[in-house]
Image (tube, rainbow, N blue to C red; front, side):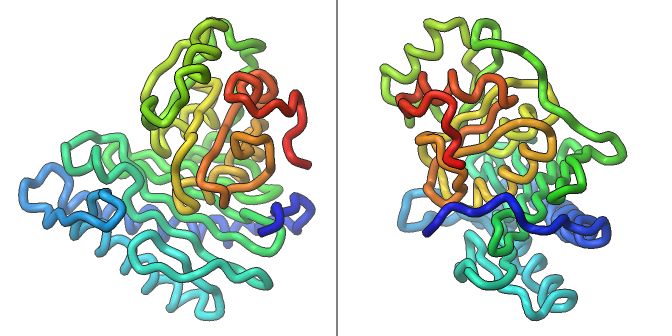
Length: 268
């Protein structure tokens, strides 16, 4: 697949609101299961957990899209699909952080992205337990409820808060490169890590291994918050099963620490 382009038209406020409303409705549905013992957990072929809540939330999103946007394609973690190269596709992760969800960790998210041939058009991170929803539309800004969000201005890795979902996905040399430059390494990961970067509470989020539905909302969210998102090789691409989000200033340094070797090249 070729890298998405950043020159598409803006997302209208009504479209951003529709994506946000669908994501928050699905997120609210997951609360029916959160904290319960009878979650109906099963295991997928890839060794990850899936629950009744995952399936129900994705089904709700698909039903709403079918009602409101019947001509759009859908690609979801639980029911599959594909990304339409010549039209719009909704990309859905009903519960990002299922492993934490089944253990009662309140930082899981419902992720919904709408992409077009130019790349992500709208991205939403809904945090159901926290009652917070981050939404961004191309050319429309990044918003946490009624407050416009922006990334931090921290200038270097020393003292920067750097998150990941799982440090077991790092090569030892990558971890040491970040640690030796003074980064504060934490695991407030999954979508919550990207949320922290976009709202200026962290400087970087790194996922060396993940999936398309984990990352699809992030390019537009980070761009509209004034930050940067690429894969670990510095390409402006969310479909390569890895991602790096930063406040922008630190992006070359983070890519260098991860061994990208591109300096300031972000794949443009």
